[in-house]
Length: 313
Picture 1 (cartoon, one colour):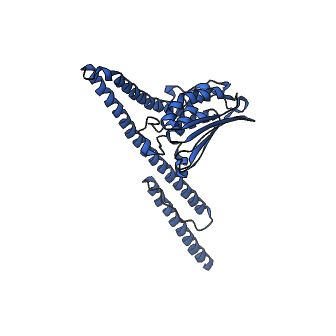
Picture 2: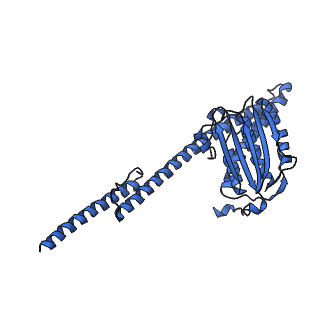
Picture 3: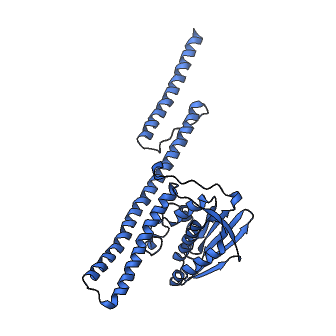
């Protein structure tokens, strides 16, 4: 009888303890359901319920991190929409005013050529903004096809140097190229041009009275390229976020004639990944930034990705 009484008391205490711990988990679960991801369960022993509690805490932490990422993405999206609206409104207002002036013959004959040039420049800004947005969505949803082949990257980069020399001159920058006479790379020609153009242009944008060095070399499994500048540089936090869409490391330059959308580097990152390559960034605030890209050869590159149709979404 005494043993039965002791067993009943012990069983009651164990059952009560277990029930209380389960009730705590239920209350925590309800908190999670209401959106409070900061709730945690105390785990002081090593039984199955504490193992479940630790798993619960890990889930809550993951949900909290996911919620924070969603919040940041939404903030960037909201900021992007505001920036895009501003960027579109300014050139559209300029174009509309000039068109009205031309329509009512309010612009002197000697100023008409300059007015047309202003409209052309603002139209190009609008086209860049729209193209950046469309390109990113196509790449993100895998709706692009790539025609990869072997070609000479040196010739491509020399052409880009010639194209961007005028923009570099505006910033009083020097564009220096250090490449072998012929540097073979296996990539989609148009996308390779897009990648290199974006990064070089980005270096010009954030460098003034400085130097941008473009170098490349053959490695055993592919081709490596580096774009180095001695511009304003970035903090560690900025280098961790530059691949995010809508992110701009320097908000004060968001109204320059380059990089209006904050999508350029996000597009570059996705394109390099589609090639099976890698892109890394090293930067120091006030000293400059270096982008290093690697494109694998045919035998080391993944198969081309089949584009998805619009209806796949």
